[in-house]
Image (cartoon, rainbow, N blue to C red; front, side, top):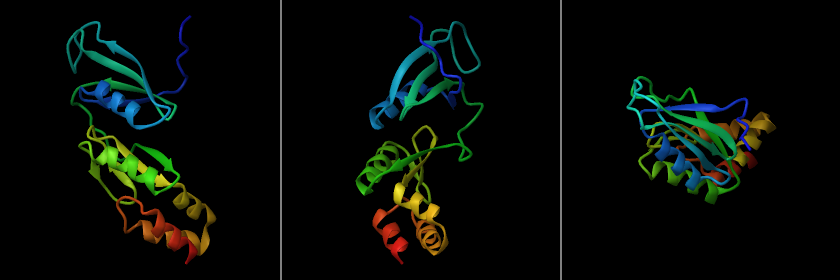
Length: 161
């Protein structure tokens, strides 16, 4: 039986560490796995025959393809994974996994992993506040603008006024 490939897959360009990144994501996030590793049938601009060329993986069930394309392109904030979290413990767990393994903090719930892929670790309470609109959204938004990692208690307090 052959596996049916999804019609739409997120393709992420890595210099040479797509397999390591995919394994890290599979270990870090539920419903994530590495499903296939493909080696180059011949030399290519980013590497040599036999080296890992692409890695099929998923993050929270979303299909992805990691491409070891060499150093021609870099990740940017123009693309990010947004991970919805239910509480501070889950927010801390993902943030600390990404930042604590060679990543970097940014602002407003954003961080990078060690491969330069951008992540938004976003507690649902913040998303709910924004959806509520009005003064509640304004207070939550202004509180978020002062944060790196999102502090759920501060957002909840801002929502209440």
